[in-house]
Image 1 (cartoon, rainbow, N blue to C red):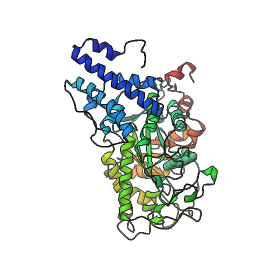
Image 2 (cartoon, rainbow, N blue to C red):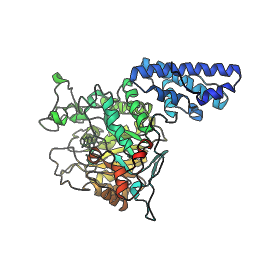
Image 3 (cartoon, rainbow, N blue to C red):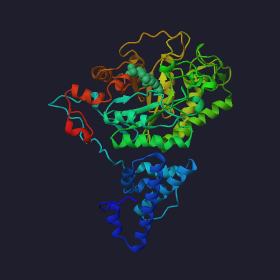
Length: 488
Ligand SMILES: Cc1cc2nc3c(=O)[nH]c(=O)nc-3n(C[C@H](O)[C@H](O)[C@H](O)COP(=O)(O)O)c2cc1C
């Protein structure tokens, strides 16, 4: 099927094996080709990449995979085959045979193959000239098993470009450019955990198995470009079913493809937003398990980090704030009751999200409105989140109420991040909001106000922001090998 011009390493190894084992390897190759063929046809994946990936043995990781999860039949069939072949390779490495894997195992194995393909990893670290110390922006940060090469993170940004929540070429190009540009970590846009959790009908989603592989295509590209990518898991609650900004941002009624929205209470955000139905406790439990199921799918898609979106007036923030939460049950009223839903979601996600991968939570530190959520409550919540296994608090603000009074300006949200960092020292903190220049980012890090800097609009204006920043600091920018000839 793929006429190779030269022998792959595993073929050379095969020749050294006794005939019976050689047969096994031939079977494995057949399986590999069949999977590459099916996945490639179904999802337009680049064949040579799969072929190369399949030539690498997963070894130890093949027997360390997880034991839960099911996906749709077509993908299941393809990946079972792919996984069986990989487990066989793992068995060889361990000198024993293993039963065929579950689909979740197969995905874990699929992801365990070292990334290699048409773009080589970036190889050169940014080197300082002379004796200047490396700017903090270009120092690595270890989060569980993940090492971010620098502190510049692409903040989540809705792109209103998916159909039925499925990623396409736009997402590959949009997110892929940041990997080539040297971002330390890239976050997807708010990715809905259920269809009614979408901000707009065109949001990305992870509520069904068919959404896994197209996002896996994006994560593969990012990894092959030397990058890391996280998913932001979200439910918009009463701010769902709205249109893209260039279409007016107002509500999308059911007859135009919108849907009935839900929230902690039945109060709308304002007159231009849909009227929510207050959630029952059963619905709260269902959304909690939707978050966990989406996190499992995110892992299958190959994401390196997950962020739970509890900011900007979306569902989890609506429960946190007394201005949106008028419940009288165990999910409303006191601080302990208002944070209950978020803590349950964090627990459910952490239970399925691999322990070796970091979990972020994004909060709005304040509603900027009297009687709302505020910095004191954020600090209190931060301590609880740390206890639940959250690694990074992403500190944003606002979005809950049209009554908010914000005076935005450069670094205006940084003091909230700094307070969390000072009062919950063992929690990593990401600062965001009008941190546009390398000097501003470095200042925030130098002052110890945050461990990471998230940038949204600055990355849209310049996807190569980290490389430009390195150049401005007098460093040699870290470029993908394929760009090395150009230099900076
Ligand atoms: C086009 C656009 C889309 C955004 N979508 C999201 C989103 O999906 N999730 C989120 O948490 N924040 C979203 N944000 C907010 C950004 O992540 C960020 O917090 C905000 O823009 C402030 O950072 P900046 O000054 O660097 O742009 C979006 C911002 C922009 C400009």
